[in-house]
Image (cartoon, rainbow, N blue to C red; front, side, top):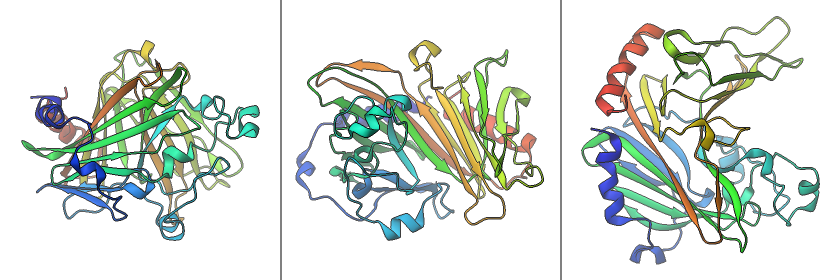
Length: 350
């Protein structure tokens, strides 16, 4: 049985509508969803950012910016704000090239067609807690004058699947004119995480960009067994690490990873290439790895939903299903792939 069939009834029963709990004050602590097999922590004061995910009692699989969390727990949100490295999991509005082109609150960034930093209202404006229940959390983000949208995120445990949680994002156009956007999931993990993405049988739909300079060497990867993965080979002499980005039109809607004695699966709705913005991939991986440093960097696991034009007040939604299990097998590709195949079958993903 597919994960969607297990979790969707709970969503349909409750929906994303505001309930009596909508009037509850914003909880400045982390909100927790916990089952016998997993733990998820969400921080509403940073826009509903996920700061912990893993098997229950196991290390956090997410890369988190502890210094930023300590030093800037309540950032000021304004049109000139920059990126703050809280990391974890957050939602962006794609495509990246349009981040600052379609707004009036920062004319300098609009004139420069800036593609950095991300929208501060989506990134770390305080969210309102609508639902805080043992099996379900819902948070409503701020309406952004930069992107012209508002995000509502829900997190739901599957009663029949204690190793799975569903993430649902609703994006609503808050402007009086149309906006063209996609929902962009961005999940940061430690760069040493071994990640697998399924490729088309003919190897198409893959583009690797190496961001090389005097500090960084390029990316090294393999596509054996029809699965893309990055290889953390030592950089060339004189360089300190590896950096780059990968754009993938996957064969199926999932990303898998192995780290810290755990295996995890991010399952999403597979889309045809025509529905994804041409400058993005439905799956994107961004690696910034400097071995021997603390921290050693990050690996971003990114998923784009369909690129849509939203009329005033119109909404779109997208989903991810996260599954996690303990993994005590060897740190070898063949062993991990065998475990992954079983995990996919049992989750009904392939």
